[in-house]
Length: 563
Image 1: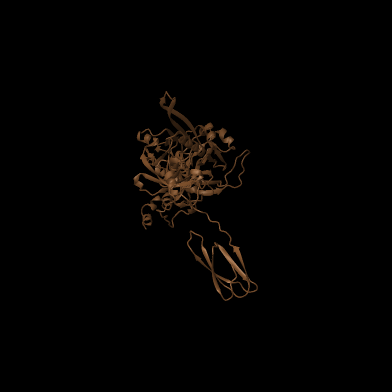
Image 2: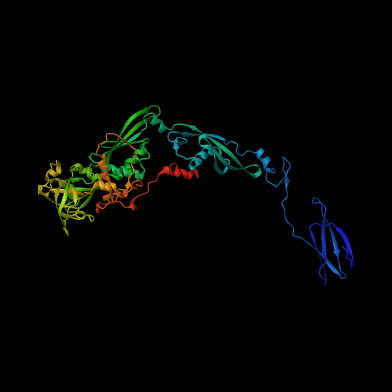
């Protein structure tokens, strides 16, 4: 490029690409250039420079611009369109038509479903409960495809909406696989699961009237069912009744029917840890396959609970009474949990007798709840600082020892009164009603009681304070849940025994710790000025809210779903 004269304008054309021209002179300011681009993008651009210069000399320099790297395109080896370079040298469309990474994966699979119990078959022989579009159902469907997806990588899987009554479940699956020369191809496809009905083995047995494999027979030889009511609440709390096929209540106990021996054994272990009992096991041969040497048995577990209930009066053997801390032979059963809790009404000594100790030294109840009589307290005197003999056991801190004079309500027209010691000194006042057992006017046939010194046998043993039952029922604003069971041969006094159990829960705080008590929203407690102030009650803090599932599908809850 030559120097231009001042005041003149000269046009020169050169073949320069991606260059910037910097012109400067000394000491004048830089020249100004106007660059005009001509030509197309497929050939070398022609740059035309228009230079306007002054008369002063100048120096002209060329500076290269920084080179920008750009990835070029290649042509697809199949269809010839420009594409970014890839190991396969093919576009995505041609690669998908050439290679199918979902080959070998079935697009339609059968899924077996039992209509009776609403469970799905999980091969080889297990049945699982799965809700629609749940994680459990998704895992079950993917297990059906797992054997055919060993050579691909699972990226994502999800359900597609289908009609609930269509018996179809559609699953959208995303997979990846390495194909030609290390290229990774990703593909999305839909697998359709067809639901087919198949009855499970448990439902087969129910339909064939041969549904149970093991039965647990719980028995207690008593006239009262307080222990069974307490045991029922423990089973409900730990949800052990869910595996039972059927629960049948009979006169002396309850039968639990199970489809497997493992569920029955689990119930037996629970009963042995919950109540003092002993068990026996028997088997009956149903069928035998001589070729495979397999046997089909029906198992029966017999559970016998100790025949002692709460508020029973018992007479211990001299050997057992001595081993329990030289306590008196005539005792009152305070409660029955995993052990028998006894208290001596003459000394307030307490002791616990487990199942093994009871069956080695058995004792029976001397009185049934129907033989209790009602007394009125005429006088009471608290006994303080009583000293126990050598080797005495523990004393109760929740009870108070007292001497009382009582009179039967049926003998108010006479002057006959009875003197006794009681452990209810903290509850009784003059004029209170109390239930007890009259030894002086009764004929009790007991092996150990007949051998006792008559001077050591009390005239009256007081059991518990009596309250107005009708008023307690009216103000009771809580309830208990019950198991669904078949009843047969029920006695007409079961309702009275159940009310006795509810009163025991109100009076004994330690007993209701293991029981779920629910607030009864449909029942409004009735308060009046004549209510018994001293009657125990259950606070709202100890109650649970009863969950009602009908609110979400009917009633007032139905409006929430339609809005």
